[in-house]
Every structure is written in structure tokens, then in C-alpha cells.
Image 1 (cartoon, helix red, strand yellow):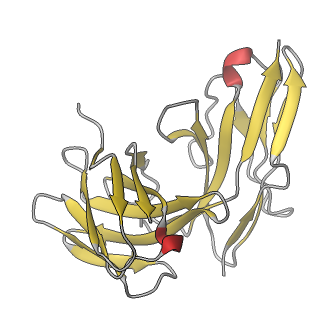
Image 2 (cartoon, helix red, strand yellow; image 1 turned 90 degrees about the vertical axis):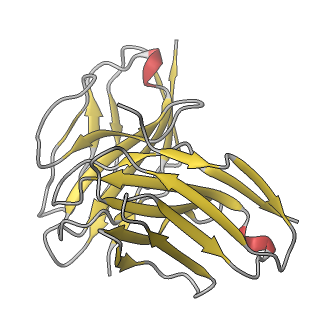
Length: 110
Length: 113
């Protein structure tokens, strides 16, 4: 069975400080990993996916298969980064079938 | 292009009733998935439809069902509502092939009293 774990429910950092949101997963196959973000009063939207290896809004995430992790990082946090972040796993079958972690609420303190 | 549209946005129902929620995907998207979001359980996958066929199903009782029409619009139905069915129901659409982005709707907030 698949599982996504986000150990921190809440995370507060000061503006300009580095931020890391942790995500660990368990799945026996070759999953696709994603980070979704939900800003206040907005819909859930894709931030990053591991297969594209791109940087969005300064965020990066590297899939570490050995540690089964997909941590989200940004070197300098901005106030507009305050939001709810969800790590999600897709079983890689092509289906739109995401398993979400419980989410981390990031607050960037001015 | 228009995003994923869910109707209605809010719904209040009584225990034992049934409810139907609607989702219109982005034009050209053939996959529609449904998720339940609650404070206690978070985001949980209900089922996915692709080209009018259920392709995947989550771990929910049979009271939860869905369907997809030839224009890719989807509906989900919950029968014999229970208080615990109160949640935000999200719909997501995608092209339906591997690795493509899922776009979410604003959700329907269902309250069962």
C-alpha cells in the first residue's frame, strides 16, 4: 500500500530564512511525486512534480529513492509563501489518483 | 481557458438523504477524479473516471458512486447520508495520461445535519 507522511503540521520561519518541508513516502513501485499548494481562499494547485525537475517560485524538490523522500526546499522564504503545502504520490500508472499527505501549514513571519 | 467548475458550492442535507455533486472538467481533459477533504482524514481519493469508465477506486463504501458522461463531465452521488459525510468534495481533471497535472476545482462543501 502507498503512504505519504508529512511530519510537520505547522512550520514557521522568518522572511529570508531557508525553509524545508519534509515528505516521506512508501510505495513498492515507481511513484510520481508532487507538491501541491493551497493559498488562502484559493484552490489547490500544483507547485512541483519530480519528473519535470523544475524550480517554481524558488522552490525545488529532489526525489531521493534511497531515503524515500521528496522534501520541498527554498533558500529564502517570502511572506507570499505562507500557505498549506501537500505532498502527493501517484502510482505512476497514468491515472489521476493522488494519495496526499496530511499537509504542512507554512507561515512566513515578516 | 475555463478551469474546473464544481456545482453547487455549498449544500446542506439531512441524514438519510442522497446528494449529487457535479464537476465540469477543463475542455479536452478526459480524466476526472474525486477527493474528500476533512479536518480529521485530510484529502482522500474517492474514484477516478476516464473516458466514461471508472479507472480507479478508493476505499469508500458503496454509498459513494460516480459516473462520467461523454462530454467528460462527472457527477458523484452519495446515498443514505451520514453525519460523517460532511466534508469538502474536490474534483480534479487531467488529460489522463501519465505524469500530467491534475487541476482542482473549488470544491463543494457538503454539510449533513
